[in-house]
Length: 265
Image 1: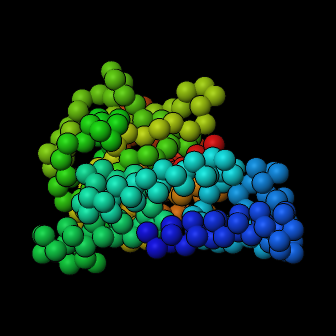
Image 2: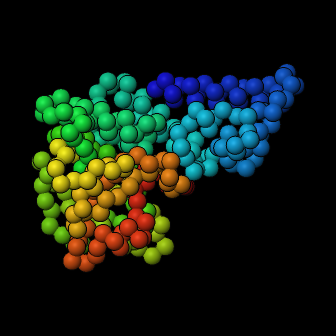
Image 3: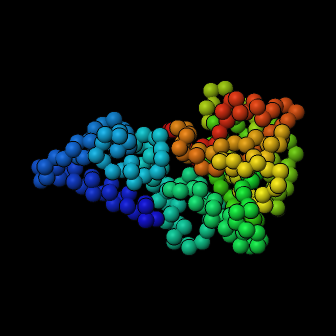
């Protein structure tokens, strides 16, 4: 909340200063001129590395234009307002709406470690795609983990309906589906509600800088990024089921399949 409050305060102050500058009550500064330029280009102020505006430095990583990112900010404010109003953790969190999503996942690991008595450094994340496609379908808290929603698959999609195969249960949560080819002209496809299950690290898993590699032919170790820029916006590694009778891990690796927290629109 403090980071969002700082951003909103800066937005209010810079727009107020710009209004006074246009009315002649203040001298036009470089920051004001950069703000006007960004508005004219529908660009989030401060994204230009030479800009004097502070919006980008106080905001979250994003590739959206000004109007889309401002709408995104309103949704984030709404989630934070409901969370602080009820003082109760949502049953399913809109992970893209957090400034630091990895810290929320770490908190989920800490809670599970405390409940199970397993050391925190002996636990990691495992992901399962549920058969729930809307957050309103989540009626209870996840066991040994948390539910997240609002992610997108780039380079692939998640099967549903008859193509999802047989459903299976993980700690009381019904999951289904496989990774499958994208539809024509569909760059990104929405993912269903994801069950983040906190599990003990197995001895045969390989520790790496991005997470623990399973080396399972039925699991694609999928990177999760905040934006399509990828690279420095890495969040965590998801484990996605694949139908090993129809595809291989190498196929999805070569396609560069990844989960993103937000689109560019």
